[in-house]
Length: 355
Image (cartoon, rainbow, N blue to C red):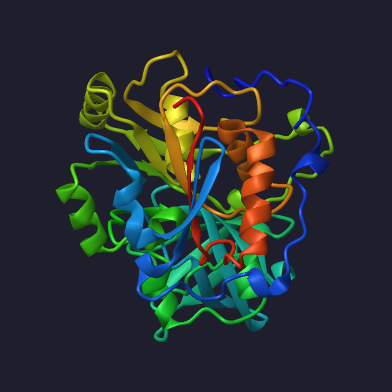
């Protein structure tokens, strides 16, 4: 579809090795800051880097600027169930990946060998919610649930957190933005985790607008890039929507000279997908947009985002926005100054030289 690959590679930044760095294990945040807006904020504006906290965000925004947030709600997608067949029962864990249609989901099964087409899986303490496995392809199954809503499971924490601790009840609150609305994500839009209601009130009082878009984040957000030439990487698809009234708010902000700041790479990718023809328009559907150096931004003037995994498409997106040398300077500064990384970590506010 239009706008899915607008990059015009320029040489530097085309190789996967350009996006590598070494992260000490201790720098991976296993819990969020408390309160949320106590997280640190690295501000990169042009070539300048400033250390602050998320609670200070209004100091770096102007009256008339607009934040655009992703209001997708994370579903407790890690389900523990019991497979039932004539030969007996077996425990199985399913991590939901994407909903193909109401009640029909793709999921990772663990261990996958315990389930196959036709198997019934019971969930919940009373086993009243059931699902039927339709197909299996390696570790991925398609399962149709017999009831709505789905059984409540655990939050699908990213692999780099789940490998170190078990998801718990606290994650049900921590791994959800305060403005989450429409359920459908299996990973949080993590830049938004830093906001509190009080911070949103202060920003509104400062004259900063707030608009909502919805992009349901898939598990593909954690997939590594496996090709050395990044132009050969194939992006995963995610579904999203931008309402006409949201488009009107953003265009009015730009017309009045305000800046549009995407809160998170998910909001940014959806906005840029909706502006593929050069002007932002309402959007509903899938996007596979791959933003890397050489890309010309159409919809946004800046980005608030967490610190991303090495060799990831999200790091390439950051380099596309502020330039590869400044991206390296930002990450070098964050590493030298003990910023906390990844989903529960600290944040950055990235404003390029020519917004």
